[in-house]
Structures are given as C-alpha cells and as structure tokens.
Image 1: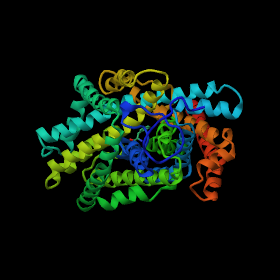
Image 2: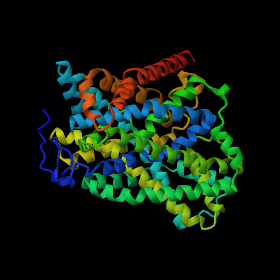
Image 3: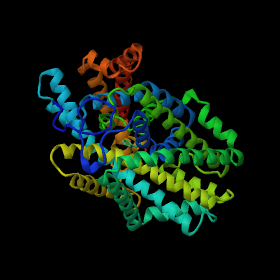
Image 4: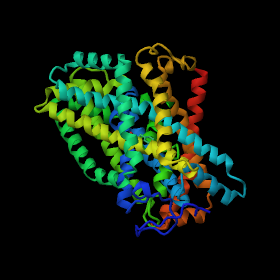
Length: 482
Ligand code: PHE
C-alpha cells in the first residue's frame, strides 16, 4: 500500500517503508530525539512569544492562561499524538495518509478524507500568510537594533516605531518576502539534517535568552502585578469566547488541527514512543509561552502599556525593556534574531506537508516549494494591507460586537482559532478514535504501557470531541446570536 516510495535509507531505526528523496538529504529522522527537536521547532515560534501574550492580554490574563494549560494537556496533546500516529502509520503526506487508511478500514475510497487533508494543507498556507508578515517584523526589529539600537525606545517612541512599520506597505512586503525566501531556501535544499543540527544549539540559546529576559523583567518591572495578572484567575470572567480563544491557541501553539504534524510523524522511527516524544514537545512549548508571558507583562505594567494592546504587544513592549537594560542593544538584536529563527522552523512545518504531498503527485520538490511559497506570499498581501489601506475594513462586523473591530488579518486569525483548528481537531479525533480500529492504535503506541493507549483512546473518542464540540457550538451560536 505505501510502498511506492520505498526507501533505501541507511538510517538503522524503524522498519517500515519510507518516502525518501535523495535531494532531501534524508527524509527520516535519525532518532526520537531528532524528531523531538524538529517538532519543538515546529511548535515553538511566534505562537508562543507573540500570540500567546497578546491573547492572554486581550482575554484578561490568568483565566485564559489556566484554560489554555488545561486544554493543552487534555485536548491539544492527544490531538498531536493522534496526528503523529496517523502520520507514522501512513508514512506519507497528510492527504494520502488519511485517504489510504480510511480506504483500508472503511472499504470505501477515502476520497473525502483526501479532500479534508488538502483543506488542512491549504489552511496551513493561510497561517503562513500572516505568520510570514509578523515574522518579517521580527527581522525589521532586529535590523533596527543593529542600525540604531533600542536606546530611544520609550513607550511613545515604541508605539510610533511600530505604527511607522505597519504603515509602510513596501517595507512590510519586503520583510515578508525575505522571511519566505529564507524559509523556502532551507526547505528546497531539504536540509533536514541541517535543521536538526541547528535546533540542537538554537533551542538552548533561546532558552537562556528567555530566562535572562524574564529575570530582567521580574527584577525591574511590576512583577507582583504581572504574576497575579497571569496566575490568579478571576472566575467571574469565565466566558465562552475566552475559553474558545484558549482552545484555539492550544491547537495553534502545538501546530495541530490541520494534519501538518502527520508529515513529521511519517518521519518518526517506528519503535520510538509517540507519547513521550509529544509530551516533551508540549512541555517545552508551554515553558516558552509562560516565559514569554513572564518577560512581557512586568514591563507592560511598569510602563503603563495596555495589556490588551493586540498583535503589536510584544513589538511595543520588548524594545522598551531593551532600552533600559545594560547591553540591551546586543540582547535585543540577539533576541529578535532568535525569534526570527524560531519562526522559520515553524514555517517549515507549514510548507513541508504541502511540498511532500505535491512530491507524491510527481511535482518536483523545487516546483512544489515555489507553489507553496508563492501562494502564501500572495495571500499575505491581505495581512499586509490590513495594517494600512484596509485597516477600516471589518469583515466580521456582522458577527457582533466581539469581532466588530477585526481587520481582515484579525478575521483570519480569529477564524482559524475559533473555527478551522477546532473543526480540524474534531476530524482528527474522529479518525484516530473511531475510524482507526483499536489494534491499529495500540500497535502504534506499543512503546508505552497499555494504560497510556487506553487513556489516549478515551481522549480522542470522548472527552476531546465533547469538549471541542461543546465549545464550538456555544461559540458559534453566541456569534450568530450576537
Ligand atoms: N506552532 C507554531 C507557533 O506557535 C505555529 C504553527 C501552527 C506552525 C501550525 C505550524 C503549524 O508559532
């Protein structure tokens, strides 16, 4: 069934047939550790450092953080495990992995699942469209640090700087283009081993930088206020929109809901424990998000910035911290450089499934890469214009007050978090919990104790779909009623 890409890969781990492409420098990971590194690369990115803090700020802080943590462990982690499991069973790109296994177990063609898989890839490119624009900002800020330093960044200057960047269409397009260009160069060269190797030192350095930043923020900023803002929940603020935002962010941050992680699952050695690998990924990812929150909010409160400042939050806040810090220019430049690299490793996870699928359809790797890059760059124009010419266009105004001010860019991120990712996660839960028969699942989880597989089945058959489904229904009825 999946032997049309039989590999002669020399790597000793695993025993199934694998897709393999010589130009790619090896499609299979050398070990579970290598998978963990690259999956962490996919998970840790702007979602942790940029999106998590601004969503926490917009949704009132601690309660959002708590719900996010609960949903991450109880719902998003099982979905991640499900994606990796489906991917490893299939050893092919998401649409083919879904279609073939659906055909295998339902006796039908599996075409419907194929289309669902393609939809997932398409929405990955939609994520990439805004992800690339915001990643471009990180590059722009790094460049500002190199050429001017952050010395002049008081809160007013900082707001003005971001506003000037967002007003300039050529600058936004150039930075976005640069980000996409760098990402596709890496993807087209297929330097998976290179990524693996880079991740080995990038992640520790990133960790040290984050901890340094947190220490500075806690010592010099309004740490008491920040801590209670982030960690003492006010239950009276519990609403469906807050919970839905937390769930959407839990999916986004682990890169699940679109099937993309199936691609990395396909490269995971057969005997490696999926559960342990995915748990490591989720733990690391959560640590980075919490560190980002701890770095940003003490400064936000100390400088009288607005926690609900929206997507510009870290770009306004962090330079103010760098301005006050000894050695702040060097620190700031290094920080933005690493955030940029972390964004690249996530972006690769958005392109790779598309390119893998196109490759299986006989399209050359280079051409596939150009198709994916070109379409995400074009789609990205919507985001670019949302900060200037289209900033008064509000496509979701019909959906009530909550979305009244959303620009096209915000509409895209809200649509993904509130609708696309939860629906995708539901479908994946259905696939892993109800379409795949129990023995197929148990076989994939054989590296772990039997009760882990039982727990996983319970999660994808019952509590994840019930939780996601209930929130989707309440959230959507709230929107249409509002
Ligand atoms: N998880 C990435 C982040 O938090 C974003 C991402 C989402 C990457 C979906 C790939 C797929 O930055």
